[in-house]
Image (cartoon, rainbow, N blue to C red; front, side):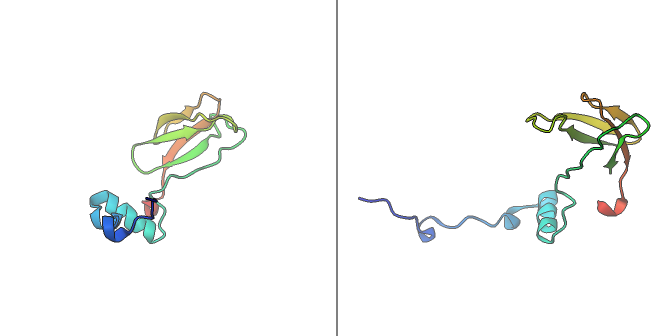
Amino acid sequence: MYATEADPEDYGYYPDPLEHATGREKKMIIARLAGDDRYEPKVFYRAQHTTVDYPNLVPIHYSDKLVGCLCEADSGHINYWMIRKGSTKRCECGHWFKGIQADPESV
């Protein structure tokens, strides 16, 4: 006996994720389908030379945010830390980051 391709009529269909999602998850799926990427992770490129006076600016909607820094271009490790709105913090690689108030319209 040879294996054959499964027929969806025999096993049923996968449910539509939108039909089963509720709450925040459903809101995120609807936004993604509408082309709104506000819930997707954002990649920002850091400046080459930063100091405590001229840091990379990180937009924050709430009081704090999780930030990840890829310290070396060929590294597979990301350094993560929390940064608070209004504070300046230094990564292990020496780059500076400052949490600033994000645009309220981007929420």
